[in-house]
Amino acid sequence: MVPDLAVMRANEVADRRLLEAIADWCERYTPLVGLDAPQGLFLDVTGVAHLFGGERALLDEIARAIERQGFSVSLALAGTAEAGQALARYKHGIIVAPGDEAEAVAPLPTQALNADPLTIHVLKRAGLKTIGQVAERQSYELAARFGASFVAQLERTLGRKGGPITPRTPLPDLMAERRFAEPIVTEDVIVATLLALGQSVAAILEARGQGARRLEACFFRADGEMRRIAIETGKPTRDAKAIARLFREKLDALADPLDPGFGFDLIRLSATYAENVKPSVVNLDANQSDEEVRFLIDQLAARFGAHRVLRFQPQDTHIPERATLAIPAQHIEPTKLAWEKMRGADEVPRRPLRLFANPQPVEVIAQTPDGPPLRFRWRRALHTVAHAEGPERITMEWWRHQMPEPTRDYFRIEDDAGRRFWLYRDGIARETARTRWFMHGVFA
Image (cartoon, rainbow, N blue to C red; front, side, top):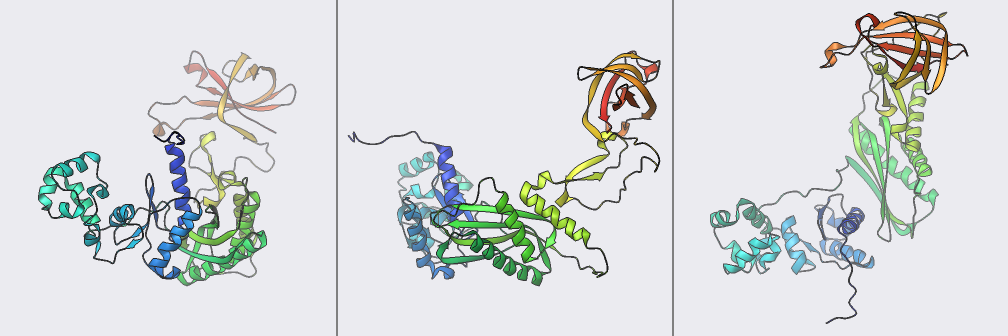
């Protein structure tokens, strides 16, 4: 019937990504944006309509903005999400006053209830073709036939009961934003805006006695794209200049640079995680190197990622590979454990410079009875032992494992070429018929 109709396969994954992109952009109106898949969105605009000139002006602006991006849109404003969902599909542009939801949705067909097709079919067979006709029935009758969930859905659609929507992103602790009459594109203006927003956020944080640990900047483009950039700090901060510098580091290090396109018409800075700042006494004569190191860690984390800036922390164990734990330097917490001193001032190192996370097997060609090997092969290379020290016996922690692990005898070994290794024997030689040897580290 329509020979020139263009037909293509539905791509649910791409449709979902597109809907999420539109939801991101709609956060310019409210941070409370939820998905109504596959083709809808929920926006909780409670308390924000006056910022756009009222409810009608807000609804018209959203419609115009989305239509400029090439989409068809139908909107409605009601007291509950379910009432707005039903009205948006059949009465585009309607604004329902609080308490008038039941009257507004009464003439709508039962399909607006967003129930499953079988339920809609049964309602039609029973002669109930509109929501108003369904609402005239007793709740216990509907619950007996369709279940309590259907009754709850009907009550919410009628505006009698309501609840919050589930936002896609957690609500920030606080935020500040700046709108531009003309979209901005230059990097200097963007950084200056972040500094000004950082000062606004810092003022709020100071009034609350808090500092931000994680901040997120949202850049809303005029053509409907939105970009999020986040930074983290090791300690709560409300220093606007430091915040701006960290964002500058992040922007410079982006693999996918920030593209302003036709310009940003809104920039928002949110403190997504804030903590109370503990008061401390500042000694003006003290060395400020700790603060400088912490800020350096924040800068490196902003440029390279927090998971790449690590710091070692001692652990309460004597097993070599478990004695330290590499933790992101920004998230490390003070510990009462101290580093164990392994050697004196005039002694040679007792632990290798490089310790393997997983000990590597070694083939022993010849060895002394109960002692170190005389010749061994590691990584296909044959080594002849010139000097050896040991053993250093380390018993495994039986209380941490269901199955007991064998005792280790460690040896510091130097081959005829001057290379030094840290080997251990898995199990005591006299107690096992066949011992195994492993390379656990190499010295400098």
